[in-house]
Length: 272
Image 1 (cartoon, rainbow, N blue to C red):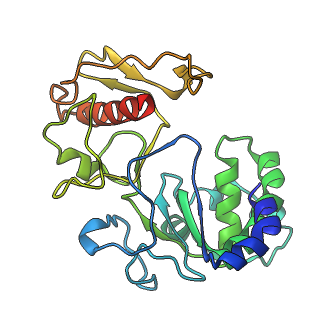
Image 2 (cartoon, rainbow, N blue to C red):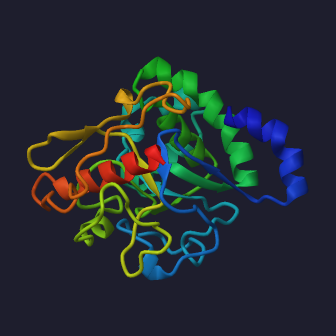
């Protein structure tokens, strides 16, 4: 679909002067706009040391240097796959990367932001490598492995940042540290995330997990439980948790505060 879009939409994109393409997941909930205006260093989370060749500000795309969210893929494709067979080239550039280097530059996922010329070229390899990847491993991450191998072939080293999303719970690799700074919040009427200074929030909620809060876990949200007709006018709203749910969910070893923060922001925004 990305290859098709880039082929057929390119003339119009060029006419409009668009230079950056952003690829998102369909289970993203926007909390604030995704921009290319450039962020202050204090508004960027970079847990994996870069190579110093990214743009400045670091979250601005330039040709040959995509920007993306860090994911937990690491560089597994280097040892998991017969990359030469996938690419059909025993001298492919993707074969030159160590697992450590692959993790540093290609352990990424949506939002993926690339210069229009880069995604035009990468989408061809991305589509071409999908079937060979699936022939070796029918993993749910096959599309991401194919993307990483294609990007490595083209030398598209990514600037990998952490702050764009929160999709689970933990301590590193996503915007967890920002969420942990929150002490209280209305669960049924969370604030506009564009105006929360000095607090911060990720750009997206990624509904990739099952979120449960408080310690008793009596309130839960999973995208698979949302009715298919949720956008129909006659469909009832999703049942809201108590307004104090976030305030009573502790910052414990299970990160119940993070579960509650996602749950509250998701349900309130879907109901609106």
